[in-house]
Image (cartoon, rainbow, N blue to C red):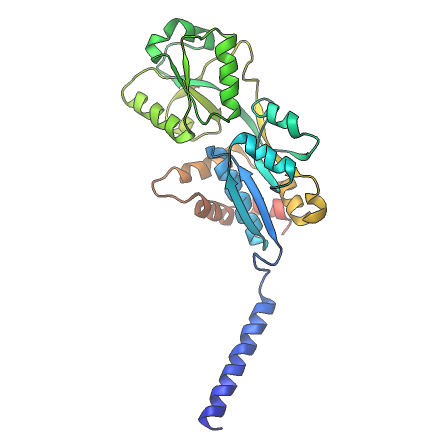
Length: 289
């Protein structure tokens, strides 16, 4: 066999091996199609959305995630522009959004239970209920530190200001990051501060905080986080629908991932892939594989 023949033979063998490898390989992301998930940039939603992304990618789907406002999240699923979300806070926080699209979406039920929202303060603040805020406006610099204006907890806080007569207070808009930054600064300086809070959130494991009692029930009781998908997903992508329908984890599970995400220079997506790898039994209960 001359040199040229040997080269052609080697090339042919390499191509044959490559083809066999591709045929034997698991389905690539593009093979099963694209899945689009929307979420709000709450720490809980970042964690859960990335976990679902990692699981579906392992099954061979091309998963795109898009951070949006709460209103846009519900609208996207309701219009069919997005396939689903795992960040629906019900029955209170997102109640208004749900009412607008409830006939256009499918609620698969809770993926996390035992959640709640409300106004939170450091434990050294010596008041215990929302009505007591009225007499201490100056100590709180007349501010309630909030997050993005489209969040359900913000509309509930506006309602609380009205119902409890907290007219001396200004609800400060921002983001989850700016809220926790302000909270951390106040705690370091032992200042009074009141923020919009929700559980699960890493701030409750980092600092000693307490919810203010809500005798009027503005913020509702115990909440849950539901998985909501577009109509037609079950027919179009039955495997994706099945995984989303089975997806359920505990606050401890979510808290573990959120704590990883708060480390400096951490990548929530890479952390989610690590979390999925370290919890094969739970993931198998979602995928059936």
